[in-house]
Length: 118
Length: 111
Image (tube, rainbow over all chains, first blue to last red):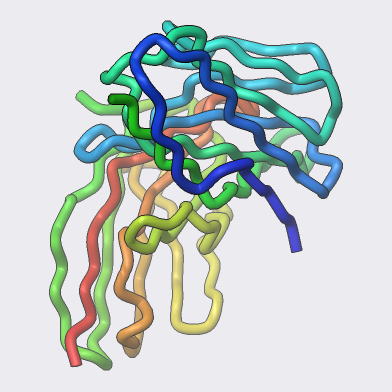
């Protein structure tokens, strides 16, 4: 079974604090993702990494940065937490299968971190 | 128009009923499709990948209609444990980066 773990289930931080969220996967997946999920807005991609030290911005990268120093670990950093970053943060990893013509990327999620910024 | 649209529901059905969800996508270049389920306050979990000819896994059947740009999920003989939110997911261009999630359809199976 694929296992994706996140460092905390619940986190409470103050406005302006630097926040680190860590994600580890044990299946040697090349791709890793950070999403946030808010009621009515669904899952939104913050950042994506397709290899060690490689990253791409997602749809809502402002106020966030990421780090991927090892293949199994992908960290999300909130440089200066704000109340509008209160959310559920979900990490995912994926691998590729299929053919050259049609590829599938099944994503597996960690349990999520519910972050509250006060 | 949203890239992936789902009826948010809620769908309330009695145990044993058959229920179907539809999902439409706007990008005709979309290549692969998935259904995830998400329980309350939990992470999404992969339910099925949707293959071009449609596929079945026990009580669950997924179908794809490329011409009309929709995918469907059929659940037969609903169980109480099927109560969850079902997310339609579309991969736009064969890139791991470009997965788009629908907002989900909420299902409650009633005893």
